[in-house]
Length: 579
Image 1 (tube, rainbow, N blue to C red):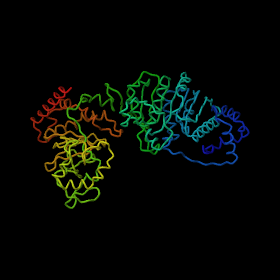
Image 2 (image 1 turned 180 degrees about the vertical axis):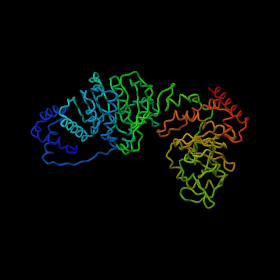
Image 3 (image 1 turned 60 degrees about the vertical axis):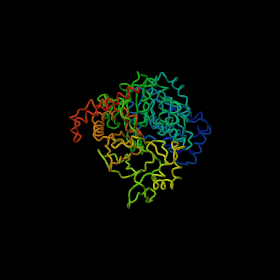
Image 4 (image 1 turned 120 degrees about the horizontal axis):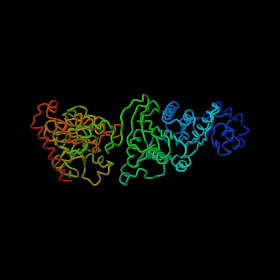
């Protein structure tokens, strides 16, 4: 690393040129810098000071950037840092202590120096050494340009945010009104692990997951969440503010865990930013800001960062974690337990062989092979992208259904459907390459997500892949039920009229509002079985009426409406017996 990598400005360069002789004694130059800027231990050794002196003599400059992935590094531009500091200042003017646990190039610290005249202490921690120097030189430049400003005590520390002793720092600064500000890494521990990064926290179960949850993926956490959690845990009893640029998913997790953690946070706000404009990345992110050392709050108001326009309030309400308090308040009556069991579609993990199209009078697979098969085991197939219409009974793809229930012996195919068996057997090696453990020690050509429910004639389905809460009524084609793939969820009926009523109720304004209130659309799989099983059909049915349903369903008769009502009561009674 060369010191001039840190982009020393002319003003800062002049300062060091004027004090070249002092660089021969790093204690002496440190004293001069401390007096000029408040920075403690600008140089930590004579070697560092001598290296800068040699740099000045050769005037060399090599500028390089680190691997952004290694540090989860999305540096905040000066304007955005200034806007965050300004917004924080408007919340609390008399900040005395600023901490930035991953200070990068120091833009947040510089912005804070320009806003808070009451500052007494500043601490920044940064793992990437060129950024440490960039920050130090930037602070020195600031005070050389503003010589009349009072200098707080400043420590810019080259270190790992995961190893720094924040507990001790919190104890020594408890008496100071505090602002924790910054932009921690936007990566997960598994992403850093995949590139063998050493920029990782010491392994600990900080979210208190059990062993099974950790194994199945919940042990994968966001680095920004870990740092945020650490800051809140250490500094929750300080008077002041927490003000971080972090991913939306991190804020959601922090608020969801607030019921357990009960951090002393109040007046929580999430201000959505345009990450593509600010950082040139496609990530949903925001400014998360909250007061410290207050009675714990469990909801968070959401605004647009630029317009300050109010959007919604999310968090814990009526003992439920919701995306919109307002919508949930008006629709919570249908929050209960579905009397119908929501199922996911067929899973085979072998689309090149199992998914087909029709062409030239043959079936054609993804390998381009034309195949002759018996029609018996071939069914129409819908994927999430097909569920855009209100009703559908056509399909683009077909699929081979080898079993009618999970684990069924598949040797029957050889005797009953020899052409199908011959085709499957010819590609047996491809089936054997399926990675999922669910296929181990199972019959040849096994599939999952299959059962009696798969063969119901009529299905009311929703995409689990997209964000829309629209439900589609799927009807059979040529008297043969249409299958759905494993990106979809559905409930099945053998009677059209009952399926139409369920379809109507699910698209009913009250149910749609309820779903909007509990679904976090920026989650990876925002629509899932847990969400759908909360829809109380009995309550939805009670909140609707035959006249309204008839206006939406052609040829609906009162006996069908009443039959659906009886079906609901029967299912509720069965659940009562079971539990």
